Amino acid sequence: MCDTFVALPNATSDGSVIFAKNSDREANEAQQLEFHKAKIYKPGVELACTYISIPQTKKTHAVLLSRPFWMWGAEMGANEHGVVIGNEAVFTKLPVTQKGVLTGMDLLRLGLERGKSAKEAKDVIIELLGKYGQGGISGYMDKSFTYHNSFIIADKKEGWVLETAGEFWVAKKIASYYAISNGLTIENEYDEIHDGAEAFARKKGWVKKTFGFASAYSDKLYTRFSHCKLRQHQTTSFLAGNKITVPAAFTHLRSHHQEPYNPATHLLSNSICAHAGNPLTRHASQTTGSLVVHLTSEKPIFWVTATSAPCLSMFKPVWFGSHVLPNLDSIFAQKFDKSSYWWLFEELHREVLKDYNTRAPIVQKEQQLLEKALLELVYEEGEQGFEVTTEAFSRSRNLNEDLIRKIKKITPKKSLHIFYNAYWRNLNKVAGINL
Image (cartoon, rainbow, N blue to C red; front, side, top):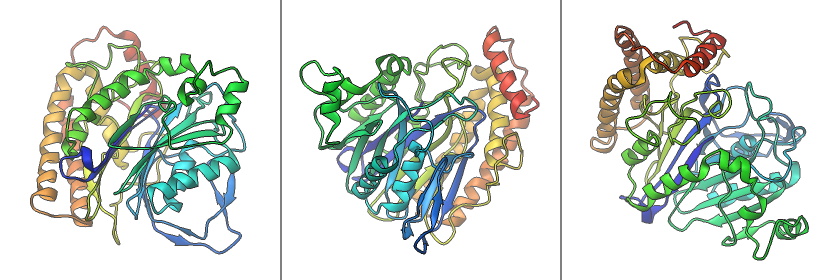
């Protein structure tokens, strides 16, 4: 489960566009942050996506992606023209095709690689959806996890929400701000729609009087079970009540459904900052990567965690240029590897989980002090570029190592949540993390 939002210039404090997403996946599903340069291809080249190959386009744009390590597509990202996209799993009445199709993450990456604007990227996704369909197995270890997709697509000038059910789709131009959270949201107020969407729904008997895309196509049981309406309401309330800033976006992506928060004590996925907790209702519900994009009139700034659990992590700035990312050990193993930035943080994250209420405040204080210093460096002192990114990741890695040593000295209190503890012990065993 995931949460994505965008605030357009009339909803931000500085007249910029601010986009944000928490990508929620399985807890051992390392999410890879990577940059790909623009390329030109000769005719006839085939592109191998996650499950199928399609003809490559003549030119691809440079892209910054955050993607689960095992798939070609991405959960979120941006391109050199300032186009940003995040997708959400949605559950519909139509069956999910499991073979011979593009995944929602493939569609997202293709939109970024081929679209110079938000509208162009939207049109790319719609065209490819019509040609190749969508679906595929989208779980890492859970091969039964399949879904359709919704997207928020934005650039410096405008934003779109695109929602799908099988081959059908509906699109709405965003007026001020918008949030999506694993459920269809567009009813009969839209700007574009698949020619056959209403007729098909009426033929199926899914429309009583007035046609609404979300009402007609949503699988109500799975949509309700995902707790998406609660999370979307949390984000919409946040957007409606504030002129959004980058630090406020960080804070929202770190938010839980109640404070003080204990990840061991709730059943469903009802927090923006998601924590896995059991194999049934909170398995594909660990925030494994977070992104906040600040699309200003000048050079966009991409704030990334490149880790799980934003409530325990820090956001680091990235810019497009001749050099973009430092070495994060991009060859991701399926199991724990301390040389990997993502997996190193997992050791810290999982040590905190032994006693979240005692250990988390210690980690949060030090992470956010360093993050505050980075915000001041970028926005008050005007520093930017690859050297700033490299220094941020280096200092973050050192801090994570120091924090691991520090909290290991704090004896965790005895926990009574035996099923939660057993769940994480099994995940650690599978990942090869010896705590």
